[in-house]
Amino acid sequence: MNHIQITCVSSLTKVFPDTDLTDHTCACGSTLRGEVFSFQAAYRADRLVKNLHARVDMGGLALEPHLYQVGLVPSELPSYGDGDDFVLRDTPGLYPDPLYLVTPDSALYAYPNQWRSIWISIAVGLDTPPGTYPIQITLQEQDDSAPQECAGWRGTQIFTLCVLPAELPRQQILHTEWFACDCISTWYGLEPLTPRWWDMISAYVRNAAEHGVNMLLTPVFTPPLDTKIDTERLTVQLVSIQKTGDSYHFDFGNLGKWIAMGQANGIEYFEMPHLFTQWGAKATPKIVVHENGEDRKMFGWHIASEDAAYLAFLEQFLPALTGYLDSKAGPEHVFFHISDEPGEDSLERYSRLSAFVKKLIGAYPILDALSDYPLFEKSMLTSPVTATSAIDAFLEQHVENLWAYYCCGQYQNYLSNRFLAMPSNRCRILGVQLYRHNIKGFLHWGYNHWYSGLSVKKINPFLNTDADACFPSGDAFLVYPGEDGPVNSLRIKVLREAFQDHRALLLLESLAGKEETHRLLEEGIPPITFQQYPHETKWLLKLREKINRAILSYMEASL
Image 1 (cartoon, rainbow, N blue to C red):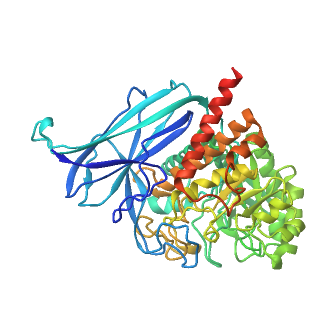
Image 2: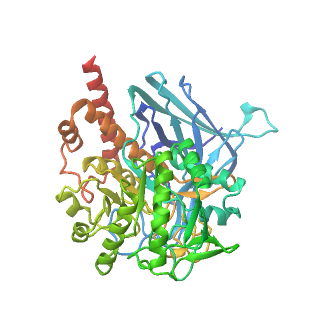
Image 3: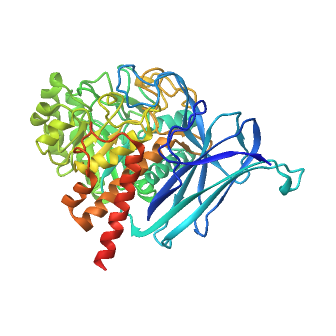
């Protein structure tokens, strides 16, 4: 029998086809109940084998694993060229990222002397019996014309999973990945607000929530984000607006449907689109209004942000909107935006508009990206969202309700990020950092941005991973467009692990206290910051094991 080489590695290993495995074998791990545990089975053969089938024996664990083939995508812009040295590579090529579902009928390929991998995720139920389970992964060549015992290529490996009796608590930190409805419409050729559109939107929202996203960008009107000046994105507007004379009438029926859809899929919080354009609030967002028997673009780039007609519109719209939201979600579950990352040159305008909006929305909080602390002091922000590259000044001043974000600009000084060229532990460390510094929420701009930079044109994310040479590969999206819904990336799986780590640390803190949890977290290392943390994959894996064992120890001591 011909031998398929199989090696179990952790979820933090990126398996490239053209290099030997650099990470150590990972043959065991532990998990809390209510957690999704993932690992990989890397495999290779010395010749082409085209009819391999995967089988997993769960070793008595009564759960159904999800198996994915880790696919490859091209990266022409893996980095900007002036980053740090905490990357896997900085050359163009094929990078592992999309996860294609493997079924019992799926035929996998082994390419000659190329490492490939199967991603294995196990959703551990709250009622799963604690214990140690030997999980056997088998790759077997199948030839329908020959008896099973005569099959040629075969390989097998065992991963031991220990299920602990503790339960992972619900996620407390807020997490939004900006959701681009127009990209879904464009890719699938779906008219917004049609039945098929709602079904597809729901599939993507459900997937986001399953991976730790609990806040959803809500297109009350088309969000004025990442749009080239004097151009526009496809209209996606949940609120129907009619104007008669100086009066507006608002139909919030589709907004109610959106909120109910989000809540049914696991979303707890909703963010309204920015009321003014990005980077300085100079203009108004695109808003379509029905007047004199026709729909027209009443507001947009052609209307200044402080235009009297727009302010008059907001004086009617915002009280009506918040009145409706009061009955559907309330101020505890809804955030408003003014403008994304205002600068010194726009601060006075931003402050005036913030004060104007605040009078109209009452108790509803304002959430905006703002990374300059002196500007923040002059602003009226309820919840600042600060780039991790600038967050130290905010932490030093003990700013309340502090959020964090990273984007294409946070790639130096070892900042956490999710580019294809970065090791997965650089993505997963985020959960530890958010916990250690008591961050209230995390925001990223790209859940499914399948356009070029500034949304000038549509791209195929399977072929173009850098938004048409605008952002390093992996910045603009976490999911790919599949036939009937999202194809996940290994990066969204790792990001979920980061937020699971955050939940585990909060559980430990509830048992041991904050001081002891911090001590265990930083035992033998310098204080963890957003720039400083151990870079070894083994350290992060061992840290999570240490957290799990400490939780178990404190639970047993309390009995």
